[in-house]
Length: 107
Image (tube, rainbow, N blue to C red; front, side, top):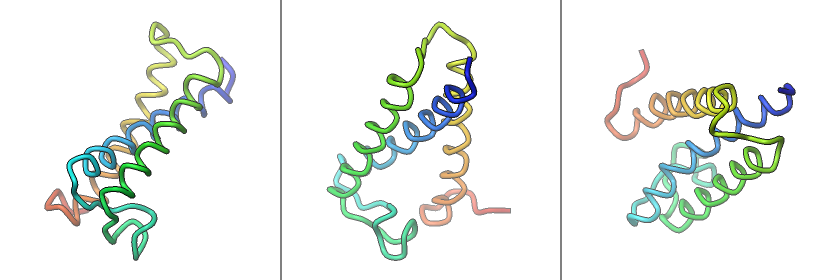
């Protein structure tokens, strides 16, 4: 597998993971941090902004995973690279946003 595919699937997993909290917060009508808030990543954005941002993340994930190379759920390496991207951005987000929502604070 080409290194370009590995990088693409890794970031596809990261964008897919990032879409989830924005879509969940937005569709339940809650404000949540986004890059468009003031200050970026710390202030709250409206639920509408979060749905739009989550949807854009899904589109980017789709392009990176489904339109680059031949991603296969049957390929362990494809799924592992996607999963590592998903896991790393998920852990980063848990640490970063935990400060605002009562999660674990950074050690």
